[in-house]
Amino acid sequence: MDAVAGLFCLLLTLPELHSVPPVWTQPEQVHLSYTGDPTSMKVTWTTFSPAPSVVEFQRVPGPETFTECATGEATKFVDGGWRQRAMYIHRVELTGLMPGQGYVYHCGSDLGWSAKFYFVALRNGSDWSPRFSLFGDLGNENPQSLGRLQRETQQGMYDVILHIGDFAYDMDKDNARIGDAFMRQIESVAAYVPYMTCPGNHEEKYNFSNYRNRFSMPGNTESLWYSWDIGPAHIISFSTEVYFYPEYGPELVGEQYLWLERDLQEASKPAKRRQHPWLITMGHRPMYCSNNDQDDCTEHESIVRLGLPDHQFGLEDLFYKYGVDLELWAHEHSYERLWPLYDYKVFNGSTEAPYTNPRAPVHIITGSAGCKERLDPFVPEPRNWSAVRIEDYGYTRMQILNKTHIYLQQVSDDQDGRIVDSIWLIKEKHGPEAWQ
Image (cartoon, rainbow, N blue to C red; front, side, top):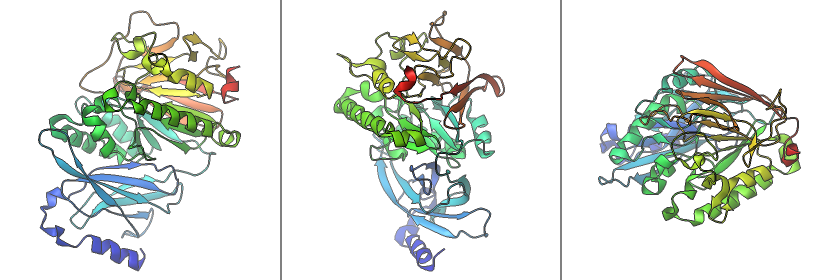
């Protein structure tokens, strides 16, 4: 590394903090997040006493010693539980990365270093095929899919993880020790690939503070909503929870809705849509579902779909207006794939190929990664808009092959990794004109 930068990093590790017991300054809960820039990556971790925020890294293969150093800062987070436990969330952005290049890194300081981890910087441009694992509702009790996800991530099967709400069950429990345990569990996934998140209902406690403080998503909305480009797709993460917890600020519903509309407008500009034609959303609570549990998605006038009273800020019409192609959901502890759907009407591309040039958005609900609340049953008879329903533990794989093809698979952990559902979503035309 540069001699001046190396000296600066060394000085950060030296001062009076050496009197702190080392167990309190040992980095843990390491995870990555994408910044939206393929030349950078953000590293986040936790200590329980103040310590410098340093990441040493290098390209692989490379020399035995780290050649690069980046520094950041730590934010003190005090959990809202009765013990008022304090922790320090460290964030360091690595810059100047080569897209598609592998790196090895560790984080911390001379008061304690993490293990070595590695990642591959995301590729630039739209002419590549990003691979995802996506799921929601993963807890640290009964995390049934976690072992398989750990192995597949470290085998290099994924470029990005999408966790669509509900973590740990719940991160605030036992004065946030459950959150600590969960973040340690997912380190063997999240320290290797960007772990991109959205809030779920189980993050609600203390105004979603454990969620907002522990994760580091792009933008300036404390990870509640944000968007980013990857390959031929534009992905939008948003909070369904603003509709259900007005005590935390009813103005957030309108604020998020206006942000969504502006983001969709920008993503729909012809030049942008030619580069990133796929519009994909991820939010925790679905608009539709056929589960037997009286959740919002079982209601004909669902709040997420139609909005607040008098149909204010409803999302179905907004997403339809801008030609959102694929909507990813969780919350229901099951897997359900819907036919292309708008306003309870099915708009298949054709009888033989329903997902080839569909004339409405496609919805996938994948919330059965595994948690202490077990699985959610379905109503006995499927709705006419429900294509496939699977009540077992598992997660979804998605590969965006190119500007016209997406491949989705549902993996059953109960059935030893068997693929229990798969579809090709094929679109030769994107945008609202595809609905015609």
